[in-house]
Each structure stands twice: as structure tokens, then as C-alpha cells.
Image 1 (cartoon, rainbow, N blue to C red):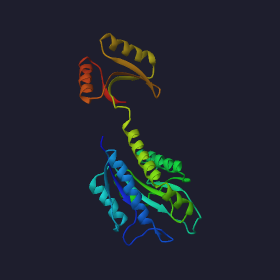
Image 2 (cartoon, helix red, strand yellow):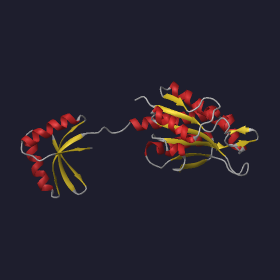
Image 3 (cartoon, rainbow, N blue to C red):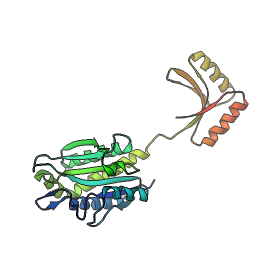
Image 4 (cartoon, rainbow, N blue to C red):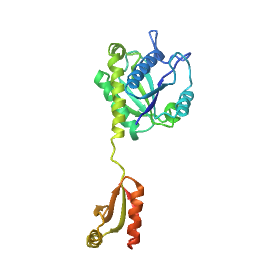
Length: 254
């Protein structure tokens, strides 16, 4: 499956973001977003950007760009700041809530940044952030260290290529995890019994008639089911055969 991702370089234009000794967050964000995008593009990911130059967009406009493009993921790049210089250091990833593929991707990205040398602050829920709340797809916001931390700036500059590669690899690895899922099967259930002997009786009867039936024990019930089809049409055909043979049926998934 070909994925599409919109990368957002936080801030821009008249909004420099955090500033430290003349260093502007908006420039670091754009540099990293473009570097990660280039790696992902070379791996076959369809990449788009909220900005590729020094322009200003509101957070709502950024979210709207992603929604209008209909991308699969939205990833925003930022750098953190603290009230006092060298007060804090470390990387964190922000998400709307800790659920789904975005949470796994956030954990993977944070781990990659930790391997480069950043202190791992954690994956945190920030449902109030517009770019996480207004986007209709899984969205993440990466805080790549503190811009007013000499330690983090040294990492950002000296290991920039490793940072970009690590983030890209973490994203790609997360997408691979998403695609490796158990296939959905349709089964035809003819009975669910509390007593195993009743289920045994029905199963024996079905097997005697040549049906590919089996028994499952789930939630205190012995369930008699037939077939395991990836195409629902095949399950419907089997269900009709069983109904014609006098069985009450329901199609279930697993």
C-alpha cells in the first residue's frame, strides 16, 4: 500500500517560534521536515508539505491543508523551549490521545531520537493542540530537543543526518507494523452452547454431512462454526447451504 504523509515545519514567516541566541525554531523545523521528507520520498512514500519556504500559516490552516489533501498521516516538526536557558533538555512526541497507530509511531520516533542521544521525555497527550485536534488523520507533533539547550543544539547540529534518518526509519517501521495484520475471516456460526455436549452433538452432525466445521470455546460458550473465508460472498454461500439444511445461522468475523 502506498502511504501519503504531510510534513509540517512548525511556525514560519513572521512567527519564528522559539528563539535562542539568534537561532530561530522555524528554520530548524523546516530543515528537518525537508530532510525527513526526502528520505521517505526515496522509499516510495507520497510526501507533501505545509510549507517549503519561510511563510506563515495558522495552525488551523495547516490542519486544513492536510484534510484537503486527504493524506494518511500528518507529522509536525517543532523544537521545545524553557523559561531559562539550559534548564531542560530532551525530546518528546505529542499526540491527541494514546491510541491507534499514531501512538505506536510516536513511541517508535521517540525511541529513535533516544538512540541518537536525546533524553526521552516521553509521548504525551495534547488534545488541545489545533494541528492534533483538527486533523482528520493520525497526527503527531515532534519536539526535537530544546532550542535553548546547548546540549540539544549540539546533538541537533552534529547528528542531524542521524536524526532525520532515525525519524524516517521509525515512521517506515510503524507503517510496516500497520500492514502486518491478521487477515479478517468470515465464518458461519450455527450454535453457541453453555454445555459442551450440545456443541459436540451439532459439530459431529455437521462433520458427518461434510461441512468444514469446528468448535471454539470463547467467553464461556462453545461455539460451532463453519468455514473461514476472506471473501464475504463465500461465507454467504455457505450460510445459504446451512440454512437450506435446516440450521439457524449468523455470519461472524475473526
